[in-house]
Image (cartoon, rainbow, N blue to C red):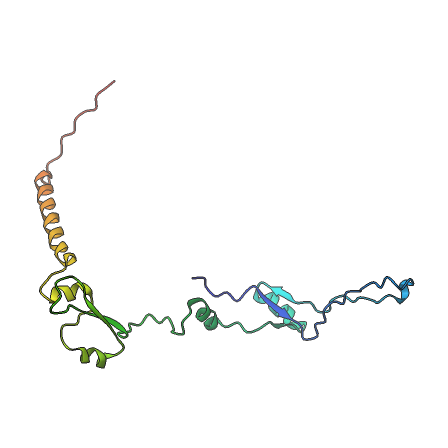
Length: 178
């Protein structure tokens, strides 16, 4: 996500007057009787830093709109919650394995508060894996860490046999000359 930046920003003058375009009348032959145009007066300016903003403010310019970092964050993220990174326990999903189900399908329920969670009763878990394990059928993901630990332990034992005991220098073979 992009960060809020105050600059560049536009400034307007309260006495701004837009330009008037002269429309030439082809029926009127005398140029002095043609409608006159006028240039823009106090045009909008863009400032790139605080010093420029102060310079134009001294000339009567004011910022266009209000710089609001909080409004910018809400517009970019689409929510009204402040990002204080605090943990929110609810709402949360809970999972339950039906008693008569032979497949791995689970019931799920979104609870909004602690009272709804207590009303569900026992047998509801925070993850699908825990729900499967709680019903007597352990999840594959929960079995894998034990297998991985056994493999790591076996590799460590092999490396210990191959390693040279400390204090002894390894013998290196001289490189073949060409």
